[in-house]
Amino acid sequence: MSTGIIIILKIFLSLIPNTRLTRCSKSVFTLIPPLGKRYYSINVPLFTYPHKDHCMQPTTELIVALDLPNARAIDPLLDKLPPAIRWFKVGLELFTAEGPACLHALQQRHLKIFLDLKLHDIPNTVAHAVSAAARHGVGMLTVHASGGSGMLKAAVEAAAQSGSHAPKIIAVTTLTSLNQADLDQQGITRPLSHHTLAMGSMAIAAGVNGLVCSPQEAAAFRHQLGPAPILVTPGIRPAGSAVGDQKRTGTPAQAVRDGSNFLVVGRPIVQATDPAAAAGSILNEMQISSG
Ligand code: C5P
Image (tube, rainbow, N blue to C red; front, side, top):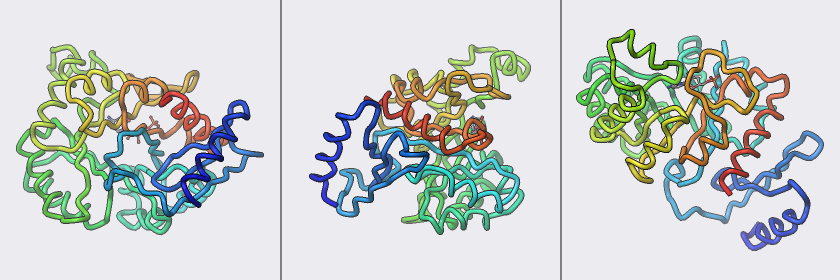
């Protein structure tokens, strides 16, 4: 289908209240809201982005955190979610339970993987872990900024040496489950916002491609670092949803408005009674906020 037809369809749908055709990935357009609880997607194979690297496109995407106990739970969840969601997070729970085999379900569907292992060790160990992760074909991989400049540089260098499959290295600044009192306990006495900005700047200077921060710091990072670094924000909570163990949260609208590139959402979707509806509502809020 040509982009001309997509434009005509978009104009037509804009005449129907609260309905739109949203471009949520490189070549997939999805009708929001879903019709009769089903999502209809239009694939546009001829359409190409001006950016070769999808990861660096200046739009905001949703990453669903697959915080699941085992690999058997992956497919039933993926079957329910809107096909517009192209990125999924595999973190410590699933990866520790199943190992790299848990990535196959995502690879078979040509989905993008955010491997959130939050590596934090001596530079040599982290470099080898990054090389191993790169062989699994993941799009983004996390390391802890607090591992220090040497460790971050080793991670970046190892990723660069993995050639065309190099994952983007994303440094976690301050966990979204921490607040000022938690930092005080660790002997970190400067204000949390200063500490987080300093850690992020140090990581960017070491060469990482992006940062994980809370929605509450996204605007400050965008202001300080400009448009280039990838900003990934967990701690996303749609209005009225339970915060759980997260202490620095923000709404999807806030994160989009403040310049986040990727919103990571786990429990508000994965533990929802209707994950499809929860994801659809977040996508809708993101789309509206991106104007
Ligand atoms: O369920 P919830 O939406 O809180 O999940 C957030 C996800 O983002 C979790 O998988 C968590 O590991 C991850 N994350 C985070 N805070 C960070 C980095 C990653 O919550 N700083």
